[in-house]
Length: 557
Image (tube, rainbow, N blue to C red; front, top):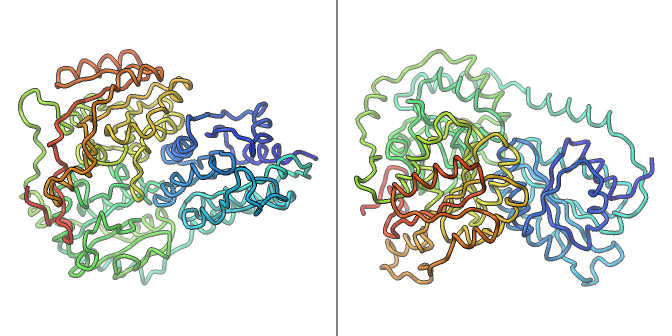
């Protein structure tokens, strides 16, 4: 059948099961937006294109599906660059569709022209510029396949506006899609050699102090149940990177918590004293390892990852297992006898973990997180954080029980990520409470997306930890720059009036009692709300790894 290019785009999105897209219209995507007018796809118009891609990102992380965003050419397209890098660093499956000037105008410095292929090459898994109308459908289908297969990631499709209005022969892709599904299933089922499986088994059986290190790929690969079964068989302590939180239930005694720069004492000590680390889909980032040269010197590391390029990239592995995470863990579990490490657990139990809140009514970040643990116990909840001290406090003190319920920007550390990502998460899990945790600096970057949440009637709760500073940068200035707080102290901002102007309820609190009252009011109303929690700027994120050290080496405060 004959369809316009824009209609072909819509049909291809429907083929992929897309029922929601995030975007912002503009001249180079007008044909596409005209086709969207009658399409059975819900479009969320955000305040800014950066909000659109972060919302698509939050949707993808929270649902396990591929997120889709749309932006026009030029400034619209460049406004999603930060979001592409954010998704790329955390291996999030996205398809970003950008408009482009007409094919005859490309390379002529035309109005709102930007070379998105060059701009996005380093921060996408793949990108496409469509110049042949007959390749439009094929390209979109390839983009979705690439975004979701293997190690996921963002894919950009740049589509000139004249391609969107051309008449194109469109055919249903039934045979092609079935072949792609069969191929993907075959790849996922590849078996590891008995030799390498026995090597891992023997290593774990001879280990005295093994640790299971969980990375974000466990969540991306939907391998949480397989990880749990393996950990139950192995009985080694489990620690998590920032991106792995939720892959293993946080309330389990076997779980020691977060490892890395601001990790829990028991988790970091376990890494420091381990003789074997079984790393499941972790890329060994510098925030997790500290000094990479010293991280694995006295340890045997087993590295499981779907991406062969991760092997020995940051830390040398004694054994590298490349393949689908679920399949690999299932094969290891099948050949592993029940293990126990009693003396290792006795040593771990002897380590002290400081987790007690200060007495009194002082409002602290730790108290707020502990309050949320109790208030949300048993309720399906998705926590979405921004970046900075708020992110680390959430990672340290929230108990995350299930995959896709802790959404944060890890690798790129994007301030402003939290609120739009929370909107995407609410679309992905409409029956879950979505609680967004931010600092006062990051919230102001994309805070106008409250208006998007209000327009879409999404009752998200934002908790702004207001210490009137760019907290994490200020912390480093305090520790390493002789308390010279250059441009990190912020003036008073009326968050309550700002929230009201966007259609949300805003409440400022300064004590534990006030926070409890505000939270109960929000819970009862089921409305979009912002709780502004004033905390002291002197509150620091502790513990903190010594620069140049490894997990377990701490700065003395």
